[in-house]
Length: 335
Image (tube, rainbow, N blue to C red; front, side, top):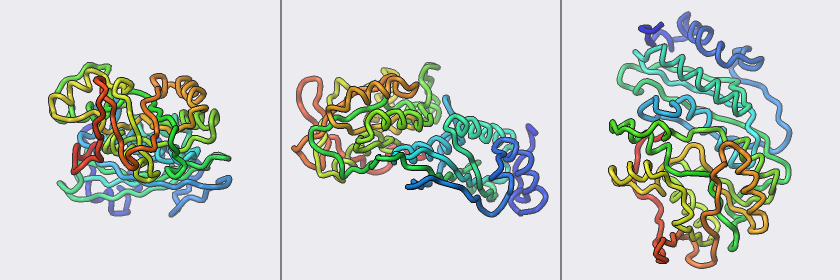
């Protein structure tokens, strides 16, 4: 298998397409719904339903802490989780480039299996297409997902109000720094890896502690700067961050200094932001710190009536600088 590669025939619907499903996909994801190999999956949900989809084109495909497959599962699981849902089912669409090594495909699929198992979701339907050499950079993946909204939960930027606290689940910029370092041949300590992780257990614990959380958001492309600007604009409030409260690893700051980036704008794949009423903050932080993906959770700022639609950062010297919405493409193909 090591030297075997994807051919155009793998996407033609014949015997090689069947072999791809039976030898690579079903052994990893087989379940009663997927095993029917029907045109779609019939599933049962309990009430209000969340639905999302995302596509993944990260380069390089493999990086410390994960690969494109782990991103594809965790990214969609996390998008569902940010709506207040318990993720249940995913679809998987693969676009494979002619010549892509089957050994690498197997590794990616196995990583997806492990991520899906950790998140407690099933991959129940999918599709595979093959394109010619040079048309897909190896592999692109699309995942869509559905989940059950937790009772009593209503996540929306419209619920953000002045006086609320802004919580962050941990260190920022690890994913983007790891991918950029791999892309540019920079060496990082083994302790610095992509933070890619499924956050559904974390969000469920938080919402159990405080169902009235106004907003949950995973700050992926554009980092916390983009996410917070979106929330400030949608809610018509101001957000003031405290620079000294922001968790940034020195190694990540070092990559930013070398490549000319601001950690506030770096993508994360295993962190979240939460907006809570002040009286709920401590119990939400306790719930976060009780989860493996929230041990470094902290309050990083507060919602204000001033500078509506803007995000400010109080520096260590006491001044305030504006944190603008990112312009242009900061780090292409980061997820």
